[in-house]
Length: 388
Ligand code: TYM
Image (cartoon, rainbow, N blue to C red; front, top):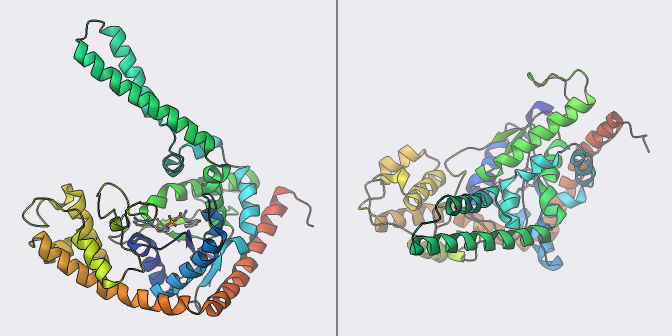
């Protein structure tokens, strides 16, 4: 298989996988296995950017591997491995971090969200209010009090954000560089992910370009030819690239949401799935389809329905757009149970065979190490390190 067709992707093995991970990423991996050489990792190095319990991490890595297989990743075709077993990821990560300007990392929105840090736009809002007070000394008292309250809330938020940012660890900040290394160490050409990873992939392309410019005198940036690293293409496909919380259509479905009702876990049984869709947030429109794209919760449920059925949004709307929420949620539950219950069942069986999972991982690690070792050696040579 030529290098022109290599796929790398991964999931953080931290707790249960959810419908977003499945529809946004893993299901698409399965579809790509026949046409591409695939490597799917368990991103355990990324997982420790937040505290992890060692026993739970070990269990989670095996469970996530079981989920990959249960979703249809075939270990005879694709390498499944844990990232921490291939030390070239961390080593190339260091090299790439020496080619990554801080300004690029400062733009990463996921870091800002995770570190809960201050946004420049908030500072600007406070400055705007101050300027307004100076320009309008006679503004009426109640308006003034209201504005002062807004300003003090913003300052409080900024101070808290500042403290959180100070406490955030370096790994959380440099996370996207390690992610670039995960991809580039295999010279992967395509990376199937959900929409939330798009910015990280753009950064990966920038880092690859920076390295190529530094070490390949003949590198043609415009045509992207002659570079050591190919610039990987994000593969963001299907109707499930942004699965939102079942409780709030403006927030993405996430493992870290406090409410378990906000997500469908791949371990949920049919009763749990039915209950979660029944309790999912809806609105007061008479049918699911009316003005659907302006109604985040209804829109999300229709996208989930379309993604699970493997049809377009338009096709899904033609089918279920005329239904009221009650009937639609019933149809949604049916399709979710039909697609997910075989996965849940297989996952349970696989988790009961840790020896099998360990064999799969050992095979995946060997393949990953062989490819990554060559890239790392070549990169070190280009840089001018003496071969050890
Ligand atoms: P992670 O573990 O947050 O998510 C794994 C995959 O699931 C997708 N995803 C979603 N897709 C649609 N809707 C959602 N609500 C949703 N939530 C998650 C993510 O886009 C992702 O594809 N940084 C990565 C892991 C990683 C990686 C890599 C991925 C590390 N190195 C190299 C690709 C290539 C992450 O934290 O994904």
